[in-house]
Length: 90
Length: 152
Image (cartoon, rainbow over all chains, first blue to last red; front, side, top):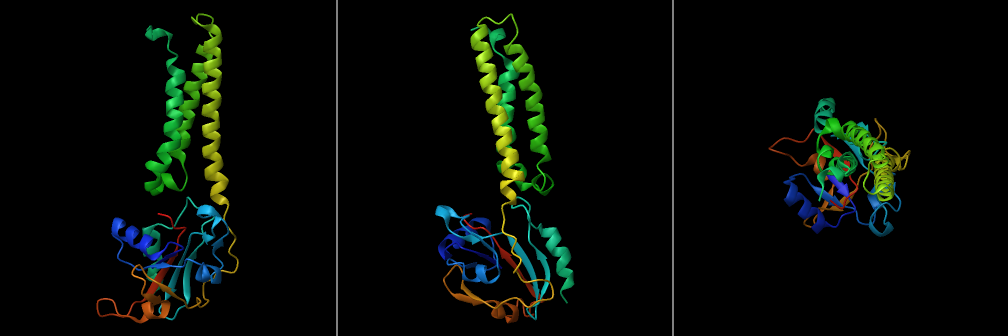
């Protein structure tokens, strides 16, 4: 699932446009983003706080098995990379 | 209009510079191989640099019909191109790294904080619920949490 500060209708348009079938959740007041220490202060439109790019692979017990915190926002996790680490899940 | 009067290397170099900048965002960003490190764009900038250098030399050649104008145009076009290249390098290698350290983010082996957030229909969805609700009759082995900047 994916989380951003986008409003639900913005995420709905994105999901429709891109054909995403996984849940897109809205964290408009960065409550969860803050709890995960992923706030990129002032980086959004009109200086709003947004999430920095981050990926977590969480197993069925809610434990983190893999993290990707990029150091450059042009560089993101790739699908093949995630499929490879998803083998860590049993 | 006399075609030979046009400083071709200068203008082709200039167009290539613009292309080197734009193609990252419209083409190469979609290819993992050219996205993570913009070598294709840096290569285009290098080609453009060679052409601009040739254009500068030509602009300063003594056989130009309008020597002063020719020099001024060559200098302005080259300087602007250099600026475009600098802007690209700065955006990718400096601005791209302006990210918070996120030292407090959940680490491998730690439990992630539980949360509930609205989905695209406004319905609240919790992490626990996603981890427990069956997909194709099977309970999921896990979930990938992707935080993204938004505004797509």
